[in-house]
Length: 462
Image (tube, rainbow, N blue to C red; front, side, top):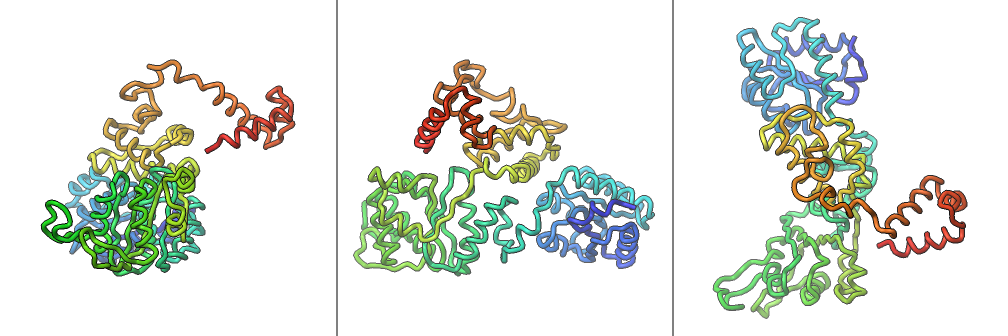
């Protein structure tokens, strides 16, 4: 008997155009205790079925109409590189089966299938899948999400992220602006897509990064111009706001928008009207505005760099994406995804991800968040050759970093006195579970002195 637990989370797909083979294989697996099987007789249905439910193993016939097994295997490998595939083949197709193993199949079984050979191959493939596939996302995390497909491009099993998904489903039908906050690289642009998709708006999602745009370029980009608006303006230019008619306009890096441009954006939000450059004819827009920034808009407002009334207009609906260091449960999932993508693009084998690498990455600050992780992975995979992928291939983690590193600057090993003081206080508080008396005793200072330090450190935090 094969361990039932190996097959509970994900189904086994049996793909064959011959009904008798489907029945024979399905019966054999069920008699061995594997009841979570799905039989598919048309190869064209495999990818569609995988979009609904990701399998733990695929048994794939090579000789099928519409899409042959070799081509289908390549399609599966491109999107789902770690799902184990066993090819089912006739004796005359053994050479093709061996070729399929070179492009990603883990084994092959001759037809008509022998029960012992089939079960041995399935057990080995399931062991492979349990070892190399990330754990399936807990189903309860998705149970309250009505439209999980809208978030399929965002790989997460973090509860904070799923709370954000619930919020997006609630606000998606609204026509009011959405403000997306979060550090650089957390995926603010990615999250604009499900907001637009779930809004059911008929128009397009149009994106623009407004950082560094002076007022004229901003106005021309968003509102367009008419002939003669400025030197060289010979034709009418359609602005992005017009391209987003009936849809959504995503304004990235809104915190960097010039004050003069902020006035025009405020008018668009308040009155739904704008003027193309060189025109005195008011036009109206029904596009929904989504804005994002990694800056503190209220801090900018205090400095006189951002309008208070615009903040209120933009933040009718607000969501804040957590940084990667607060989503460590997602780290193995994202690491695996980027490694598979990089391996496919660079035409390299998908390497094993050793546990020490993941543990080391969990201590890395990732100031650039998911974007930084992806860049690190692609750089590491460009130098990867064989075997498990190791930390020394990752810049910032290993000893083979290109360019100057800490070893070139001895002073970089030492924290400042201020940094050391903060670290000691934080460690003592963490070690004592927040008990100030015990923490003060560890540090060798009075409780009153520790209390003053904690207040000072709190006021210094950004």
